Amino acid sequence: MDRTEGEVLKERLFNEKKNSWNNVNNEEHKEVFQFANEYMFYLNQGKTEKEIVYFSKEILLKNNFKDLSEVQTLNPGDRVFWVNRNRSLYVAVIGKKKMEAGLNIVGAHCDSPRIDLKQNPLYEEGELGLLKTHYYGGIKKYQWATIPLSLHGVVAKTNGERVNICIGEKEEEPVFYITDLPPHLSRAGQDDRKLSEGITGEELNIVAGSIPFEDKKISERVKLNILKILNEKYGIREIDFTSSELEFVPAFKARSVGFDESLIGGYGQDDKVCCYTALRGILEVQNPEKTAICILTDKEEIGFVGITGMSSHSFERFIVELLEKSGENLPGMIEKVYSNSKAISADVDAGYDPTFPGFYDAKNSSKLGHGVCICKYGGSRGKSSSSEAPAELVAEVRKIFEENNVDYVSSELGKVDKAGGGTIAVTFADRGIEVLDCGVPVVSMHSPYELTSKIDVYNAYKAYRAFLK
Ligand code: MN
Ligand code: MN
Image 1 (cartoon, rainbow, N blue to C red):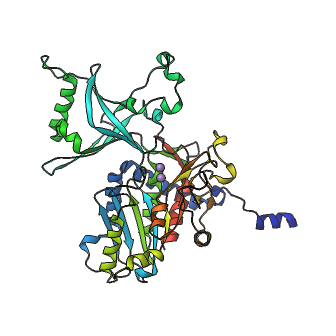
Image 2: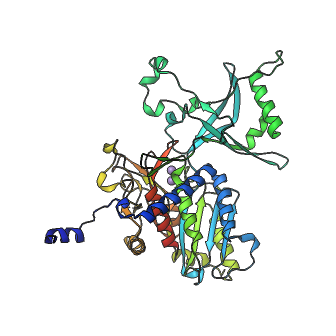
Image 3: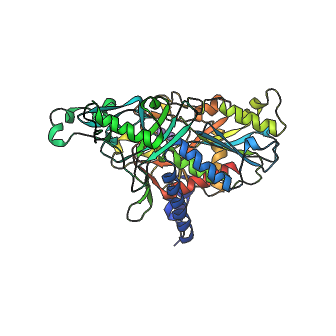
């Protein structure tokens, strides 16, 4: 039947958001699910920034990328990476044009909210061995109690030795645990606390053991027994906690969610979903016009800081080495490179949650299953602390997405004056690099088990690949 004039006009003029699953044929459906399986494997391999960097480096090596330090000169088409102190990873595919013409950059972050140990963590109370913690990133603390936690990290010893520890990921290994009161007791006060104080920071104590050392003449026998085990297994003493980075994360594996298996549940999808899709994207970049850069950076969740965060000059060290080895390093060149460069800050957005509609502007939030979300500005209140992308850049990125069949929506984080947040976008803008936020919508962001849609993950991969090519 012929469509009416109004129907035709409406389709042409309205920005109707369509469910991406509608456009997927059988073959693509298989591809989307296969990609999701590979992504879930990645999530299970890397729960911390160091593990993600390590595992991503393995993927790069298998795909003919070389360590930049082992390369003397760079030519168009060359594929290199640099690992910054085991915590950040910078990848490049050298373009046909000189770097002066600008770079195409996709930057994601490999750290996620978690529970770190305090400097003096181990103590004994009520005949239990316990660990004091200090949470990392923005968490709702009550969510982290009574779930299985695994321990990941490193202890650096004064003799130069670096002891890697990972306990609780294998079925046969023990896990760790933060306690909570039973409802029978919490009536006496805890139930009346504000949600944000349901479990306080000082109550995030980890149960680490309960068997006392056999010698009854000494005190703190449970604590001694734990230290004895640690000493036998890892050669460490209590003082070595001082020079350690021991991180507790949920011990859950990433899984498909729902009868139709269309969704992904997993820890740390903010922002490992963008790490994986950006990395997969750059693997497929061959002989690009402009040099393509992919960044997996640490310390985003605490403000892009530190020697491995995106505000650090470590990034300049990488770019300068690329310039030097390409024979392009002249005074002031890096500023020229930056001013001609374009970046996507690849980070997640808060996916629309129909259980809590009052916390979103439904017209300006991203529903699961509609593709990637473009976020022109973040920040809070009157766009404060946002690096707002220029309209011209948004148009350029839209063009790339539309020509490459990438499904996208445009959204912002929650309601005006009621929500807010930022990404490493500001660190690109500060360098004079045009930047736009674009990532995957995540429901229950920053919780121990976050939710994404397989079709959005696949669209992110298509989006970053197209931008880098
Ligand atoms: Mn993030
Ligand atoms: Mn985050």
